[in-house]
Length: 272
Image 1 (spheres, rainbow, N blue to C red):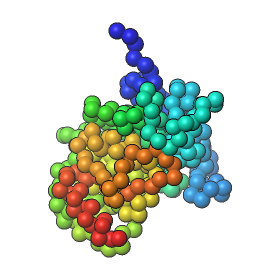
Image 2 (image 1 turned 45 degrees about the vertical axis):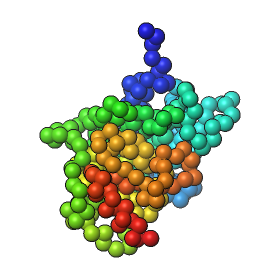
Image 3 (image 1 turned 180 degrees about the vertical axis):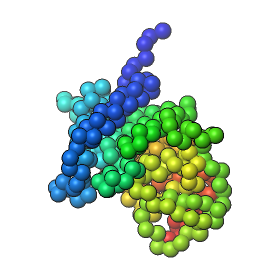
């Protein structure tokens, strides 16, 4: 049997993702300035450090790369003909958010992450989300489920809560809602990837992007973790969440059950 192609083998891809997040943790441990760069609004020094660290190894491994800081990056000599479309047959784009929750990181709040997701012609293939403050890792492979290495894995069972009624739900929000949505309680943690992984693990019942302001790097890794864990997801406006255009923005909603998702979509529509 021929050896698996390391560029398309999920095990090899996740091994590379593991190494990159370890290297980033080491780099951030020696970082003195966690403040804003002053060059791009909302960009922090740790964003730049993380972006620079991750791109070259992924390009060297044969991937196209999409990051928040650099957009779409291809190997020198390639024409980038796929542009912002899906990865073509036999090719993979790695969508990277080097530091999701940059403001939390700058304030020392231990809720910020690296998110990497390999996308082929069929969609998300392999995902890796790691809390850079605690080391907790979530990994998922399409059709093969989720692995969690610490923390939530100590619970009796990893998976969504099963909540199906908005009035019973604890909802994690990104953005300021114009009115109370009818939930039991809400939280605003500030790192989309980890917020969505918390839905996958049953810590909260749902996640809602109020403003529709997220780029694909913010949520795609967590989207695969969620879907493999049994969470139901949608864009609030019914668009495809898997979009490889750095200019596009989406409003991801993740819920423990379809009934809860339906209630959240109705809630979101009522805010418009």
